[in-house]
Image 1 (cartoon, rainbow, N blue to C red):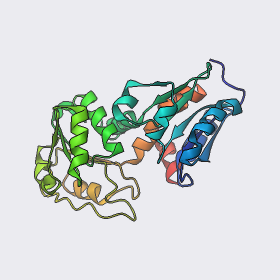
Image 2: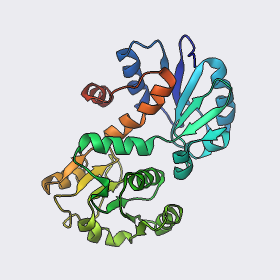
Image 3: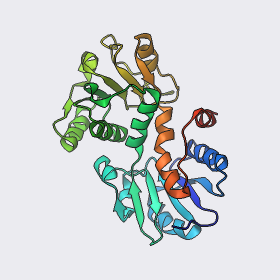
Image 4: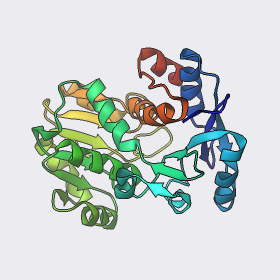
Length: 277
């Protein structure tokens, strides 16, 4: 496929000013000398369909989709990948030369690649994964952990019904545990993942007791503000290998950039520093 002379991509959300994606993609465009642009687009829900129709005519080759449009945008795509169907949300759009829109979800890919880079010895098959939370991010995490070979997911969420719904979608390898029992299952986990916003700057603290944490457990937190959350600090003190959440944001962007601009970018220290500011 021949790209426009100056291909455009961007990120659609509401609000969007906080997004790190323009910094990230702008860094890669500059690093690889690609004559393209990546822009933030503030789009309200009722304008989403019209905006997506116009974007290819304006030279856009694709875009990212973020809150609150990741589920809503599914109705506007002509084709959707298996992983996006399984997760029930789309975060990456490719505008095809025939006018069709392909919807993908790269969050699970980004999560696994971040773990592999940050904890090279990590093996999904080493034992059960304990997953805190059952929202949209948890769906991507659970799907990718099962695909990577985790024998069981011990899933817990403050609102049980959301965890039960997720188990119905993903099957018998997902076991739901009451939130008040979360501390009691940590010793079973080879991997521990926080997919909630608990522990994020400005949010409530994650109040799960951590005394059952084993030093063999690989611990990761999807929160990256602060970069070292209280969960990661506690896990480090317990001797665990820890992986911060920033890498997931970086790695999930790789497949989209490659599709839009024809170059597979590398996630390295320079990339991290640009996004950290």
